[in-house]
Image (cartoon, rainbow, N blue to C red; front, side, top):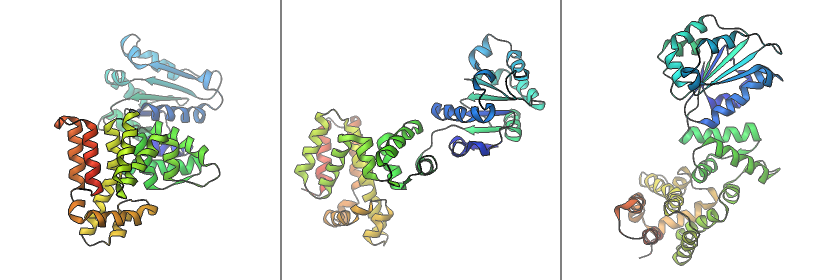
Length: 338
């Protein structure tokens, strides 16, 4: 069987492991979480006495392959099952693929082998054997809608909290795409909201971003409302505090790409308020955003994507202007001020 590790972790006990589990990909956090989930299911209370870990590089270079297979065939003195893990097993698998295939033709019934590899070609005979009698878990970073779904599923099933897709995307915008970091923030947010059933965007801003995030959202609100003086003041606070210009631009982009999408939908005939909702604008901000885009004008709103891209390229070296001046220029353009 083949699964993404995030799907497996939502209910590990419902899965059949067979004699082998392959963890493939570059997300170390998810691999560690998978092993932590598998250990008690396979070994119960006997983890310390019935588990063996090999360094795959050392196993491939210094030890005969029989070392691994002898370990797999050893009967545990303390329990019914043995767990044998090969970390960084890439080169070992390449060097001894044939021996692994032969082992899986008649595997030990009392041992589970876990191979940790970065790449895993599903076209090989070994991969097909694993898919048929074992479990291969893809441990690659999630992105986009898949990542947002994982956040909502994890919040609901592991923390019994509701979190909207928009709030999940905001969390990604502020934390990044690493599932380990996101999960840590979800645990903090669960504690923060207490008995409340829902984690809101405001909760995320308060817990995850601290005062810099609050200041960024205050700056975007000031731009939207036409208060360019306040927006420039907030920008100054962020820059003086050492916030990276690219990160400040990221906060602006998170908000204004929704306005650009809403503009495109409106041009195609969708009523503006409905377009803003479909673009992902938070419900409480729909009315103020509607007023903003009408004030900005359709002609200027259609240039939002160009302004954001131009500023990004200028911050990366296309312009000789100081980053502060590039960001100030963008704020003026977005605010609709001359």
